[in-house]
Image (cartoon, rainbow, N blue to C red; front, side):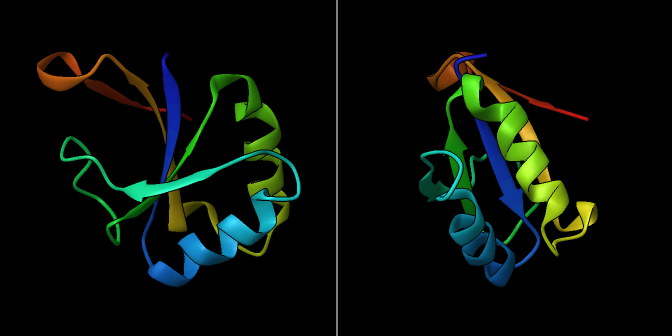
Length: 86
């Protein structure tokens, strides 16, 4: 995994998660990748080392699990792969 990406069902969820996560790990706002059609168009990019703490912070937040999805991103360009994480 090169990085992790979190997509959201709503813009509110993305903005709320950004506020929650800035306390636990650095996040970068970016557009949702073409390979991931689900979402509001906004995503948060995180380094793989922070994935566990980010998932724990999201689980402890008021966001429901169906409001966001975590992906493992590998490669770039034509070799880019997005794998949905549990």
